[in-house]
Length: 367
Image (tube, rainbow, N blue to C red; front, side, top):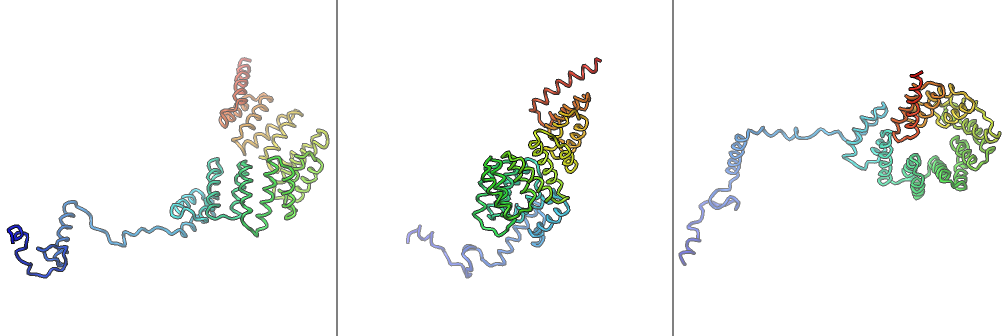
């Protein structure tokens, strides 16, 4: 044996049995020695860094409410019209379960009616269609795009709805009526009539459907048929449904005017405005009649009532300014035209009227 080999050979075997190779050949791998060493090491470490003691395991558990509890709380808030706080809870739910259909549906109900809110609602409805594809979900998404005036998109989505079966007759009725409405908006009168007839076969007492059919006849120039349909819808509509009753009266006014070669039955408009002062079409038609028949003050009152209910309507504010100018009330006219500019800074007619009113006010001051 060479000297190098002799040096590599251990001089003697350890006199104790090794329990674990990890401890090495010179230290006993007994658990009590290891535990003591770790204890001493931890003690030194804590002393040096002044660390707090480790809390008990039960204190480390977070008391997070379950999704069911959050959903129940959100529903209670919605019942009490507190949609702002309900949205906070629903966002927590969706951060845990991003595609929970019940939470998405509640969130849709809590979204506001602003432009951004409408976009968010459409995105939520589209998500709901991906998560839970059904006839009703596609129908609701189509209705949302229709209300947003995306008629082609609404039509494409509504066609997808019919790939899913449904036994709900109300949904089928709404789908046929919506198909008719889209066709009417797109100028396809024959398709509109076809789908309106399908809806009519399912429910011949629907006032909104009768109003739509009357509108179709008006678009075709069939004023006698249109008047009859509006009258039928008015008699069908309940007394509590002031919105649709007002629509029927406005429709009858337009049809009657065409049937009588321009004769105005303004009492129909006055009755419509009594039912619904915020009916924009009725206000606009009444203002036109009032200007032609020099009933300026009455129209100004109606406009102010309307603007109290719809303060962001820049077009109506501009019309009100023009009526107050005709009455010589340039101060009120200036207020209304400034409101119109604030609502729509790009309204060139309002900007021109401001210049004219400034000139008129200057002349009045000099006089």
